[in-house]
Image (tube, rainbow, N blue to C red; front, side, top):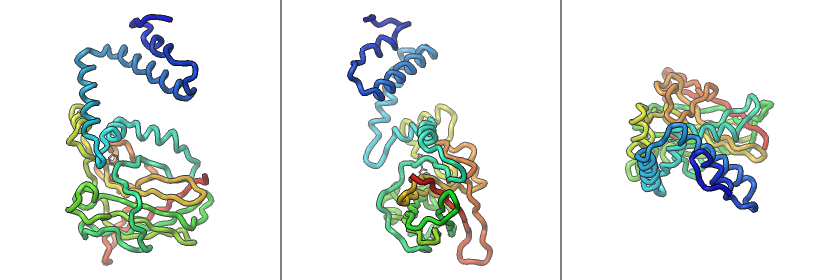
Length: 278
Ligand code: BEZ
Ligand code: FE
């Protein structure tokens, strides 16, 4: 047994752990304690900074609600969400890469007929999204559910503007047939700021960072026998691709957005998704 000391601080805490503690919990907690203690020593944390940190975390919790998860925003903006995602979704080529899920998915969006529009407010530049859901050998996957969501032309998700946007605006689910094809109409997404009126926005400001995400369409693709794919397609050329505030951009996820001349749809975005067997 040792009393607490500056030099042996982490050991003092970790040595209190009971023998019966779950092995994984013991590993995670002892590593966490060791890293936090090392960090505090590394920066020589002042009492005032510690108080600020406690207040920051308190405010982060207090602003959370059923509609807002500030801790996930904190994780996203510190690159933690993308790191956890990367570690847990290592995939062989040519599988489509994962990216951050984000807080704006809503379960059980309407199942729409192939080719239908997801844009219910009629705002924005029309775009046709199409492609196939394939396995690693390039064979089409039948019965894949392609769940999509994006912001409207003003840069807001429907759930951020209840009463202003129609419910389920820019959302829908499409189920592939034997050809693995999905096709739907919508609007070309626009870049938007993540909610930045809380502690995370304040942190970004203090760090000289902007709160913007480059324009993207979200996809959650599930199919029996395959790993879930959580991803986006990004609009090439967007000003924020290199500085996405949540670090979600990957080269392979930048999709073509081709201007269509003379049709009733302004843009065309083709993209195939490749799933990995589970
Ligand atoms: C999103 O893309 O919807 C998103 C992702 C992370 C934080 C906020 C929004
Ligand atoms: Fe988004």
